Amino acid sequence: MINMEHGGLYYTFLRWTKWSKHTSILYRYLESKVPEYELPPLLIKNDGSKVKNSNDWYEFRRNELLNLLKTHEYGRSPKYSGGLKYKVIEHNELALNGLAIRKQIGICLHPDDEDSIMNLLIYLPVDDEKPIPLIVGLNFYGNQTIHRDRRIILPKTWIRNKESYGITNNRATHDSRGVRSYRWPVEFVLKQGFGLATAYYGDICPDRNDGCDLGVNNLYKTEKNASRKVDDWGAISAWAWGLSRAMDYFEDDDDIDEHNIGVMGHSRLGKTSLWAGAQDERFSYIIASASGCGGAALSKRSFGETVKLINDRFPHWFCKNFEKYNANECNLPIDQHMLIALNAPRPLYVSMADRDLWADPKGMYEAMVEADKAYKLLGTQGLPDGHKLEVGKHFYGQIGFHMRPGGHDVLKSDWEHYLKFIKLHMK
Ligand code: GTR
Image (cartoon, rainbow, N blue to C red; front, side, top):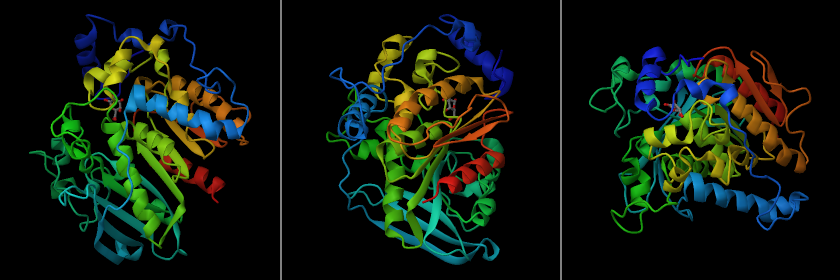
């Protein structure tokens, strides 16, 4: 079966011609070609002993897993000890025709660099009792793309060109206002009693092959212009780190309920939301849309996007060590069930689409089934009874998921599930 997403047949053809010398891309979509694999155990400590209870988990295994994922996949972020400044750039109590409070906060990402600003856009429902629960997620083309609201500040940082969005010369333009609003149902979220916050991921680290030589990764280098060490942070870690800096701000804002913050992301930013939640337990709900390879999908299945395919196209996303597993998934000492489990016992939701084979829905489902062991160990329901991977069905346990018909995207119908799921679990 051919994945028609990501630009359809033409895109598939390009991938086919590029990699067909080594491995047929079609081969990657055949369930019969999935190699036999054994997952590295979740509940056995590095010393070979069993994780018997939550104490073993919190005292030992959780740290071991974090360490393994940092070493082999995402890299290590610099230790953060607080103290970054932020500035309230705008605060309007009558935004979106009186429906919302809008705040725009400039968060400085390095104490010695006043220009390294992540602009956080926040909408809060005007009438609801404070503090308000909120969902935060990064966006791909700038805050102005999530809504036509003309008061949203345009990013000044580099943006990937996209002519159909009016983004040329790698800069945001007024034309791009609202171009991605279908992915961000702001009014709907507000009417459900939630705030919505977003920042442009390129404010943190530009999404390009040399991204780690720019952005925050560069600012925090101990040696100027040094090349990345094998376990230095990649872009996904940088974006996750940026989400934690947004979380620092939420803790300071009395209008926001810092104990009810969900972190949400789509695709590469779905990988990011899982990794942000894994490292930062202040996020209460974790939502990952179509996160695929390097997100919720098991790497060892080598189905759809593989470790080699992702590292070749996006050498800056992961740490350098991850390249050791190009076409060598069998030797990976980790897999993505560990990433999901690091979010336990907090409610976590995975959304998928049946035509998005590139992101391997089955691999995401199987990773959840494995991660469920940690959720159960920690005394939660984990996956609900009777769960199975079926188009159009949804399941809301402590782990929740759905697979809707369609392709690689995030739609209002997905958000409806996210909000219902969070409400079910709200503290
Ligand atoms: C694709 C990539 C996926 C996913 C996606 C996205 O090109 O292969 O891993 O991250 O981009 O972020 O939209």
